[in-house]
Amino acid sequence: MELIRKNYFLIISFISFFFIQLIFYNYFKSIYNIPFFGSDTLRFIDGSIKLQNLDLISLQKSWGYLTYVLIFYLTDIFFNSNYNLIILYQIFINYLSSIFLFFLTKQIYNSKSAYLAFILYIGYLDIQRWNFILYSDSIFVSLLIISLYLLINTKNFRDIFLFAPIFILTICCRPHGILLGLPIIVTILFIYNFNIKKILIVLTIIFLVTFVIFFNQINIILIDYNEWIKYFINGQYIAEFQSNITLNINLECLQKNFLRIILCGIYEEPIKLLKINFFKFYYFFFNIRPYWTDIHIFLNLIINSTILLFFIIYIFLYRTKSHYEYIIYSFLSVYCLSIIVTWNDYDGRFFNPIYPFLCIFASKAVVNLYLKYFKDEK
Image (tube, rainbow, N blue to C red):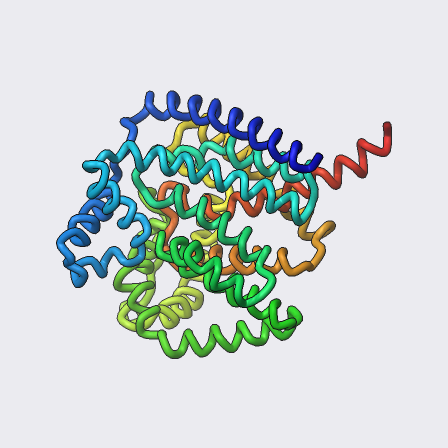
């Protein structure tokens, strides 16, 4: 009976996903060419060329996107650079990830929550539009869902090695992939029967040691590479949007490390710094941009505010403090922190990696509230 239900779901899910992709395809095709080539697409094409020429030294600038560079490399070698195939691959793995999301939600909660999470995921415009763009974002989100599903189903250390190829592909897909390391560490600690207090102590020690050892590299990423403070000072707290909030920070501070810059900012411009971070949070979590169309902004405000509301309800009323929750929380926390301390938040696509997991918790809250207030009336 269970097998029949699974087969039934797979058939219905595929048909639903197929028609939704057709709708999105025709909609996005009316806006831009598919496949869409962005400025970062050249990085992947160039990385593929360097890989073909075994120019590994020059390739180091693309290490953070190695998985996606390899996809371009294989497409160039075996399919004569037919990048339409990459779009098809992105759509296919997106469908697979929706199945993994469904079974992950069903495993930790129930079928009703799983169906709702599945619908919220495949119907979200800002997840699906990246399927038609030659950026690594679509595949990264899909691999992330699969990776966290595997982590939650990890029973022993041997499973970590068994699932390692998927974890490596995820980590190497985007620079933020390295953050998957935290859920992996949390999973390993749970395998060795650490409780949450011991895990927090271990993670704090790891964080402090890593921070001290790699402080110079972190400083380079946050200031020299990311140019984080330059944009903040000029009021550009999200990509491609210039505000009228500017920070007047002592020039001597700007020549120091990022910690000194943050402290100077708090001391010299605390109100403006609060405003900047408020707007950054607002645009990030509601996944909107001032330069998007009114209908796009309206839809995202409705969808995101609803999901965030039910996520908060879940946190306060229904959280179970189980291992799987802490594994997912660990990724959500470190990922959001990485957005806070950097300027990275382009085109709204940096919200996408946390969206599926917010849907899991929000769906459970919706189902619980429905059962509590409506089911009892019948």
